[in-house]
Amino acid sequence: MSGPSIEISGLSLALGGTSILEDVALRVAPGTIQAVVGPNGGGKSSLVSALLGLMPHRGTIDIDWPGDRPGVLAYVPQSLAFDPGLPMTVSDVLAVMCQRRPAFLGPARRLAGRYDQALERVGMAGKRHRRFGALSGGERQRVLLAQALIPDPDLVILDEPMTALDEAGAVIFEDVLAGFRARGVTVLWVEHDLGAVRRLADHACGLNRAVLFNGPPSAVLAAERLLALFSAPSQRSLREALS
Ligand SMILES: Nc1ncnc2c1ncn2[C@@H]1O[C@H](COP(=O)(O)OP(=O)(O)OP(=O)(O)O)[C@@H](O)[C@H]1O
View 1 (cartoon, helix red, strand yellow):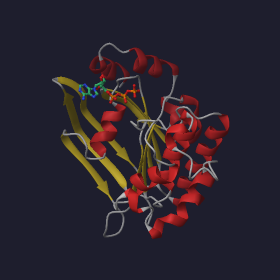
View 2 (tube, helix red, strand yellow):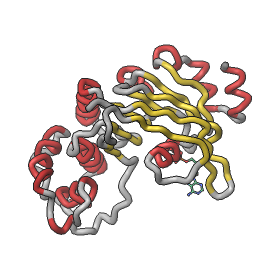
View 3 (cartoon, rainbow, N blue to C red):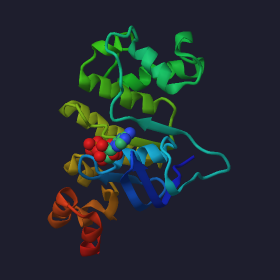
View 4 (spheres, protein in one colour):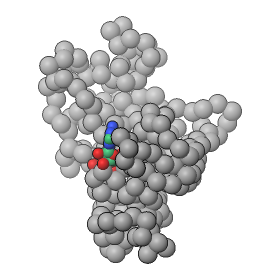
């Protein structure tokens, strides 16, 4: 199965009485890599949470899977809230994130063989039995990326997956993304590295409470738009100014 399309319309979300997202509309075509860029606190992770069904919101999010059944979704979180003292191995963490059966029973048989393969893909071969809490930040990030490869996803949601990755890790990430593209996986990718977005995304959406722009990176990531996106005091007036 190839990836689904995503249609977000009229999405508004408030937290603690503060408006976080306002009337967000975004269409992601099947099998494309859609980046979401914007300033800290601009609502990118909140958009991801709404997409994952984790945050109450107004408006609609339609994921249109090809075929007659929903496909497989993988999610790479921005970070994992984790007590580094917990006696959990890399394998345990993969089991917690990739399967419904309790992690203490070990990996589901159907997935067990894929752990080593996924860890090797992200340059973590042989580290399956290491304590997760003892890994470096970049190594943990690689494990988070590896867990998204295990279920063979049709839709992948990445929330700042390059954070903490070194140069070799960034090359691996780019290769993983190329693999998703080749398989027709739909990717929604929150990212701060605008150079990577320019190189790798099909479309880039500028989000700061509202969508300020969306289109091919070469067309929309121009200096004046980025300045507006990252310094805007009033998003509504900017959106009008940019349209
Ligand atoms: N539970 C909450 N209650 C109140 N405000 C919240 C809550 N969670 C997030 N926020 C606020 O919502 C806003 C958007 O946060 P979000 O994490 O979506 O931004 P972001 O664009 O992903 O930022 P970053 O680039 O820093 O990761 C922030 O101002 C944040 O403080």
